[in-house]
Image 1 (cartoon, protein in one colour):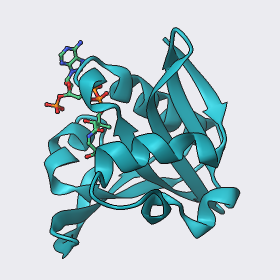
Image 2: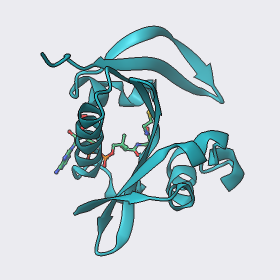
Image 3: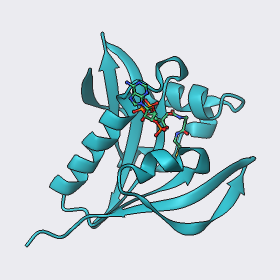
Image 4: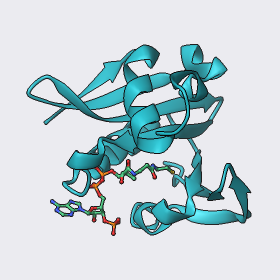
Length: 138
Ligand SMILES: CC(C)(COP(=O)(O)OP(=O)(O)OC[C@H]1O[C@@H](n2cnc3c(N)ncnc32)[C@H](O)[C@@H]1OP(=O)(O)O)[C@@H](O)C(=O)NCCC(=O)NCCS
């Protein structure tokens, strides 16, 4: 398994097929994509899992985290999220957050994310904002 920086375009197919299979590809193309950092998990040159990071000063949001359906549950997502958390530490990010699908929130809790909002629903999917605060180094 290898984690590499990828282009926004590389993320779109997995985003769409995993997260919004009933929507067109344009639905998962973000206006902000050009300003983000995008990372992917590769195995045998195949892209299996993607995540996108958007930084604003010492705050960062990750979005559109997805692993190909047939490859889920085998640790790729955990490896990618751990990589991202480490990148944020290196960049001295104080707060990493996401709008989490409530189905994924037990997963994020294991990485130290806490719920910081009420839940809301978009396109029939329930979300909650989750955040992880990094300890400041002395
Ligand atoms: C959330 C998501 C990106 C995680 O990716 P993943 O590659 O499946 O992640 P992992 O395999 O590391 O972990 C997923 C689960 O499998 C478990 N797992 C990890 N390694 C495993 C292994 N070797 N064997 C079996 N299970 C394993 C993890 O503990 C985790 O369990 P949990 O859901 O109870 O926390 C993926 O499930 C996904 O694409 N979901 C649909 C889209 C989505 O909801 N994205 C998040 C939006 S906020």
